[in-house]
Figure 1 (cartoon, rainbow, N blue to C red):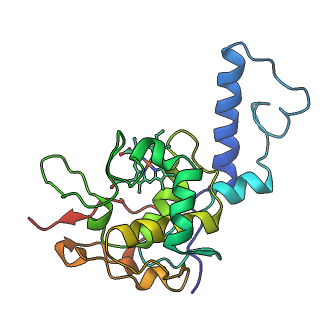
Figure 2: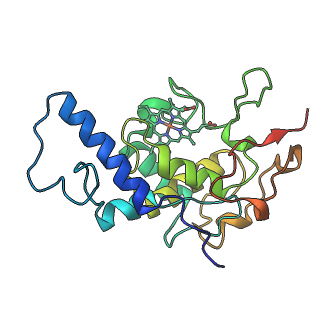
Length: 201
Ligand code: HEC
């Protein structure tokens, strides 16, 4: 399937780096000579290819952009401990102090949606990849994120423990509460779509 237009343009990343550099300089950090050329303000630097690859990843609900890689729940259980998820979410994902990841109820009053209430499984992969671990996001490998996603789906009774999740199988997972949600449909999704889904009262 064709890749959707990229969410992040090189220009916006240069701007972001420029802002970061300005902040570092105004807070007293020394600037590195030779890193400030190439932008009209003389600040910032071009992102490296590795930085662009890490940030330029936006997975729609249908999982069309999911990258290569794979993992199952057995591997995910190990990653969950090794990568420190258990420290915040508890050894089995329910003890906290972070939000519980297994079971739970969606409530309109708190607008909190436990993982098993999410309408599309690729969104779990996307969220973990970009946002977790909370204190060090962007450091997981694609295989680790597939394994963690499989682990959470298994613990929530949605897939089997040895079922391999990859770019082909993850979009096919039927989330149990999908019918409770209305729009936008996965086909209408673009990287600029709001991520919220309205739950039917
Ligand atoms: C330092 C604490 C911390 C660590 C470590 C951490 N998390 Fe989280 N996690 C949070 C917090 C806090 C939230 C809620 C964030 C929010 O709502 O903005 C969260 C939210 C989540 C959610 C979304 C829950 C929902 O239903 O909205 C998932 C999934 C998740 N974390 C998975 C993981 C995984 C997998 C790891 C390990 C790679 C991990 N977390 C590591 C603190 C942490």
